[in-house]
Image (cartoon, rainbow, N blue to C red):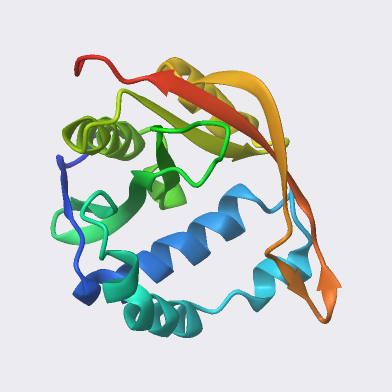
Length: 185
């Protein structure tokens, strides 16, 4: 079996909006298939996601500490991460890893590792010494991944009420993890 091609992580631009949308939608459908209603995952739309992302790109990136990253393998975008200052009132001065996704076909091949290392570095570069992220309840694969990379649960949970379908709200229980960023490994 051939070794996977190397992964390159770079700063995303608005031109990556569609590729990021594909990564997000496909990864949600694979990773959350047993954790969210099928109807919610089915209604996710790459085109709608890409248009919304492109339309809000400039506003979202006004703060230079907000960075989107894409992971490429052989020129194709196979992963995405997003970092910036947290909006958590009880964690002043923390950064946050808002999103990190890799296409299911690339799981356990180094894409996630490359993204999390670069995301942590971008948070350090922005002056953050600590950061947080949230993991969907039951997403053991992600929880194990973050644990291996030094992210520890702090006991805080959040009910994410941003998602629904057909007029039905789907509240999602998420567990917060935190990490001292320190020096790069």
